[in-house]
Image (cartoon, rainbow, N blue to C red):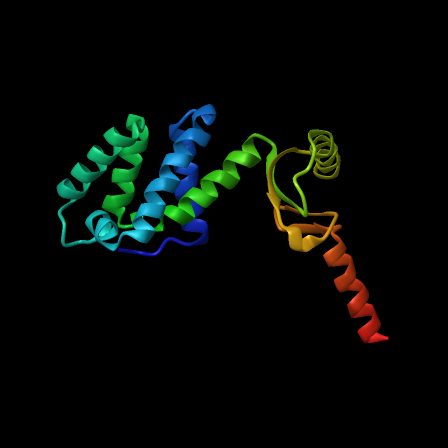
Length: 181
C-alpha cells in the first residue's frame, strides 16, 4: 500500500481522463468521491480494497460488486482494479482531486465558492458569475453558502484566490490598520 501524492496522483488522473468521455466525468467523479469517502470513513472497507492480505482477485471482486451497485462504466471498474493492483487505491481521494482539476482545465472552467450573510437573489448571483468570468477568462461554477457572521457583503474564493468584500473582512482590515498605526 503506497501513498499517492502530487505527480503520481496527477499521472493516474490523466490516465483516468484518457479512458472516459469528458461529458461523463462529473457523474463518475461524484461516484468515485463516494467510494473515496467510504474508504476514508470505513476502515474495514478500506482494508478490504487496499490490504495486501487480500488477493488481487478478491479485491477485484469487491470492486466489481461496487461498480455494479454504483453503475460505474466498465472503464472505471478497470481503472479502480488497476489502482488496487498497483497498491495505490488508498490515494483515490487525491487522484479524484486531480481528476476534477484537470477536467475543469480541459473544459476551461474554474470552481468557486461565494459566501454571503444572506441568501442572494438570482440577479446578484448572475452579476457575480459575469464578473468572475471577466476576471478569470473562464467559465465559473459557483457554489453558494450563507454565513450570517459576515454581517453583509460577500466573500468569494476562486481556486486559491480570495476576494473578501464582506463587512466582517473590511472591519478586520480596518482593525489591522488601526493596530499598525
